[in-house]
Amino acid sequence: MKSWSIRSRLTLWYTIVLSLGLVLLSCTVWTALHQILYNELSQTLTNQTQGLEEYIRIEDEENPSTLAHEIDEFARSLPARHVLVVAKNNGAVIYQSGERTGDVALPSAGLRSVRLNGHPYLVMVRNVELKGRHLRVVLALSSLEIEHTVKLLGVLLAVFVPAFILCGALGGRWLSRRALQPVAEITEKAHAINVGNLSERLPVPQTGDEIQRLAETWNAMLARLDFAVSRISQFTADASHELRTPIAVIRLAAENALRKLRSESDYRAALHRIKTQSEQMTGLVEDLLFLARADVAGYAANQSVPVDISEIARAVASDLGPFASQKSISLRTEVPESAPFVYGDESALRRLILILLDNAIKYTLEGGSVSLDVAESDGQLAMTVSDTGIGMSEETQAHVFERFFRADPSRNKDSGGYGLGLALAQAIARQHGARLEVSSQEGVGSTFSIYFPVCNARNRSGAAPSSRIRTPVG
Image (cartoon, rainbow, N blue to C red; front, side, top):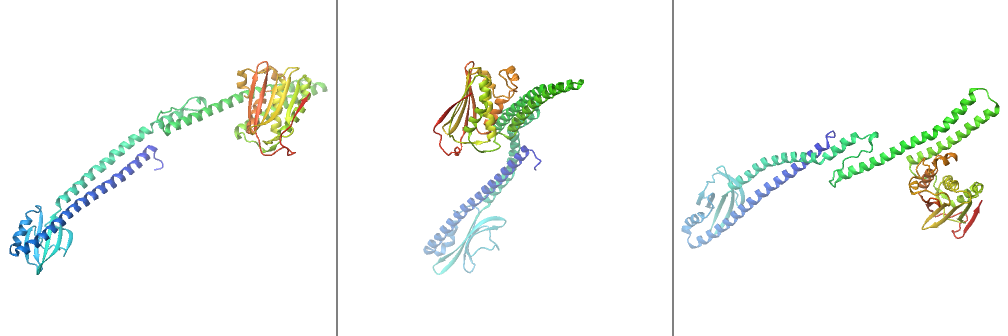
């Protein structure tokens, strides 16, 4: 049965349930009708026997000699198929009408069913006490019509119940086939979808039931797969493109160095180029591996310990101060002496702040300013990096966190970037359950804001964040 199709199993179970229901209903109807008819007949027999008993007592008091004649008058009012026997204690029959009881064993008193001459009867036997004597009254009414009625009902049920079951099974199979037709269409369409046509979607039946929700769920999953495969394809193409240049430089430097004998300074220059390109490739590969691990393992931080992000922010700003001074950029920090800790990885958070500050300095013209601000608000720790640089258009802002995206490709190549910095920053922020947002205007500057969930721990001094220190750097 496990190898049967769902349609066959549904039909089988539907037929079994329908059969059990119809058989149970048929047995209940047959038994109820049989009981009702026999109860009515027994009540009629009881009433007539009681009436006969009273009639005999009255007639015996008035005129005992004509008792048999009076009983005969009473018998004429009984149904056509009946048996009435009135006898004395010694067995002498006073009156008898209808079928002969013969040797049929009758109860001394009470009600029972018997067959007289092959016909069914319901018999009531009563002992009547008269003055100075006792009579035995036997009254039987035919139950043949009841038996015929019950048999006819049994025959009808035996014929029509199997017919209903057969019709129900055929109807159930038709209904199951019609109900599962959308599943067959979805299955056929799903077989035709592969990596090459993930943009295709399954047909969605507008039925408002589980099948519609199933098709919509599968389409949503296909959309996510299509997006993921597109990102992987784009990511692979971009990574191949970015790796091709340093590999080509390394190869050309080695080939030129090996083509003929050169001086020590030439070899050292070639090795220096190879070393520089290798370092760039190493950084690129490490960034790619980090992003790949973030995609596969999700965005859960590898280490989840309380980290004083204010201290990290001040340290990173101090490290980048000389770089800002070279471009005559004012680097200001506004960080509280003490602030709530955040759960996370200290080295990853340091890299996040470094990426944002480094980008702000790179894209700010000489004489501009960059600010780093940390503040607690509504149970979150907000960090903001603002600059007065070249800014970004709305279209650029929509893609700024994409991998290998460059708003100014020539400038990034000159500075050694690969367009992965903000993608890495976004991944690190998500690792820590933070939200990274950008707001920018061309020619005015950009602002990157990060909102961290805070933990209960405080800074090492244990003080609550109250005072703020404005520190110009560079």
